[in-house]
Length: 67
Image (cartoon, rainbow, N blue to C red; front, top):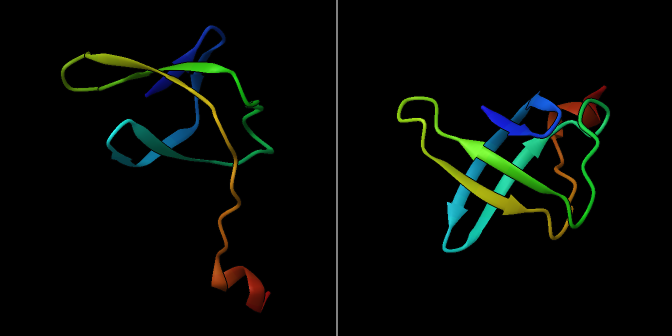
């Protein structure tokens, strides 16, 4: 579960490599901005880490191109 001060958000962690985490989310559902901080909670253990948004990239899905 990923949360900020507003509660739970629909965000998935794609991968964590070194000190960078790649997050997947629908920008129509979640309004994040560069500089914003999030607290990522691990469901099983309850451990958490604070991350800061530093950049955005768009994902491409080949199935969408067919539509």
